[in-house]
Length: 200
Image 1 (tube, rainbow, N blue to C red):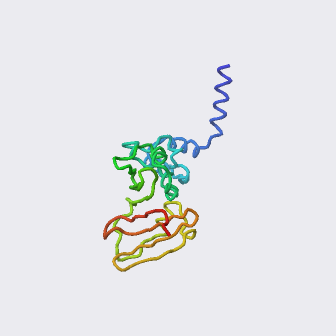
Image 2: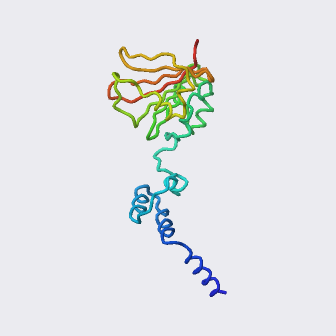
Image 3: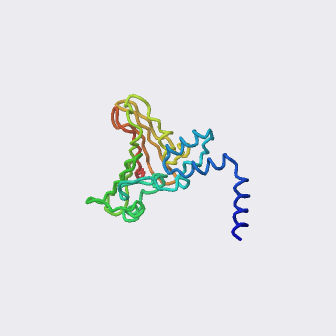
């Protein structure tokens, strides 16, 4: 019985190509750079899906779960307008601060959810931490910023752009009746996108 099992194992092993074995070795790495180097050393093209979190076998390192914002929570942030603070806080696995606002950070975004009535989210601000050195004298790359938030600018109605003291663009999300703006806070600062209920 042991001999048969060993024979089957040898047969199975023999049909595995050298490249397949190398891929198995490389895919055992849980460090991105180590995995990239392994594929490179073996002369194998790195598949796009190889670096996806599910294929890295470990979650991204985090310092504080309550202050780390998952990418899915920055998708379509206009959906938080009108949501109760308690529900928004639950989605982000944290508690509102002393003035009932919700603040979150991860490596890419700083997010603020404000409440004017202490019950519902009325204002959302997304600060892009990885895109600094913006200029108040240059047009804001609104389409790019909104795409990062899974929003298609073509689905928005342009309200106005301004370039007097600084550049900004404002739009209306008719579907959600939300006004949104993209702008540069100050020279060499970060890009920002905000959302609030359309008053008109």
